Length: 301
Image 1 (tube, rainbow, N blue to C red):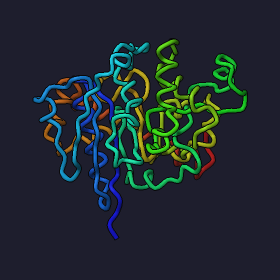
Image 2 (tube, rainbow, N blue to C red):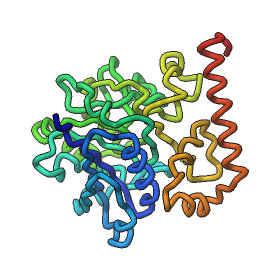
Image 3 (cartoon, rainbow, N blue to C red):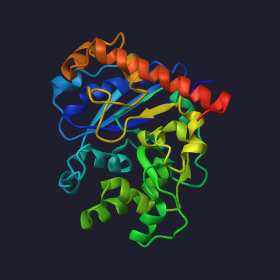
């Protein structure tokens, strides 16, 4: 039986071309059964830069955003750009034959077959996501007049029923909120308002965020068992694995994705990541795995 085509959408600007290549590569190397179809939403990436992005098995479709309202939005955090808003155009500009899609930020890597996420059951909802470990949902609900019982999701990994989103126009409602309000986390906040108590929770290993590393968060006990081998590692916040100041214990796995890629060496060179930094990151990763082993198997903290 022929496997379904997996539609994956990204939203980037010119500066994120190298990172896009990394995440695409991490998807392709772990998917053997399904055809892949990549959609890149952008604001005017030139032809030369597009030519740098190639895949072995996937098709790539470039969709330029020209909406004046969306292009007028600014990101309000230093680690973000206006490209974060491009995911809101998925229901409007995805081809009519696309009824389901996965949206991914470009500061992450896959560690498992994306088909597992694709097959996840959304139930009656149009959006699936992973809870955001770094934000208190009660505080968020109180601030925006939402029901106290609810959860706040991270929008870096989204499983979308595009057909339902076209019908209910929830993303258009999100854009309307952004046009009249300023939010701390931009469209992620607006999406959470639009979908409050109307989204399906996906297991946390599909969006392992930096905040999951902090024991002070209530999610730590429940989520730590997915830590050493999460299915998607999301390098949230300002520090990134293509910068020398990255401290994430799983940053070594990002470097491993660059092995054998023609663009990997130049990405490391431009970031000033040399042998000593790579060695430090590898040791940090080994220590992290040892720590998790002790926690789970020996009961040590």
